[in-house]
Length: 355
Image (cartoon, rainbow, N blue to C red; front, side):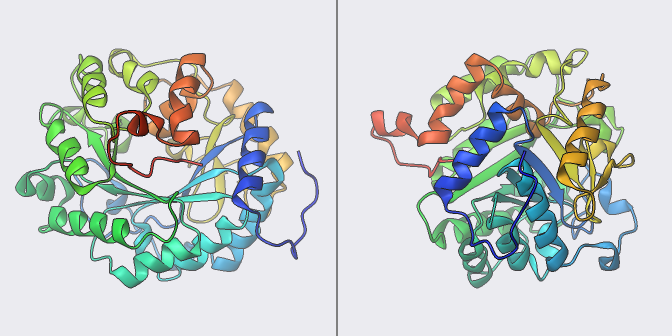
């Protein structure tokens, strides 16, 4: 692990960041983290309870603190960093946050898509955003709006997909529709996959997690894995790793052991506090701004070694765990190297390069 950084260092090229990411993977250092830039939210989703908690902009990091945190993270290598929340687009300085992270890492964004204008989308791409996922759970407006607690949510999400799609400034920049798989939409998911195909973007899925609300009624019903794998075969823009999809039924039937949270992945909250995962944020191991990265890595690994949790199969867990299996890594190579499947089939490119 690097022990020094240089504040005057120029931004790393994409090639150097890719090489550093690969070295981190081979050294079993973290390669992915979720950074919750805010827990404030403008939606009232049934499948999440964060919006019920009191949060203030005063508790959130400044852009300068993001710069320090990003540089500290870089001591372990370059990472895939998902900017989430809450709703990250509520941060008026999000472009500065993206630029701070993009110097050393690959920043991604997850958003509900509410009222995103072309100028702001273009500014985010220009700042170094590598990809964006817009949440859409139903192709039917009434059902999606009810799920997300906001009238007009689907119309705004579709407009955001089109806006991000049309304002990209580089060919590698990826636009996804992300659906949370629930008991309510598992039989209608193809409508969302087909919507992504019509819009010329990618599709990814993750199952609802009981830890978000404690409400069992939203949990999908097994079996679902074969259905998801069939959709992936029929829709070239369905990017979720087949290893990840193949284990949905096991995850829904008692859970899966072997979580790598704390070793390959971890979470950073709005105050810069690092924990092994988003659901363990109440037990941070240090500050990404103040605690040296080698110390954070050591403490996170200690949490990982003691981790017996089987409660989730979020894509931040399953997609990353897939990379540590021969089958999963082989399936991920098209995303790492480009969408060769689309080329072979002469289908439209979905801008699928992940790094």
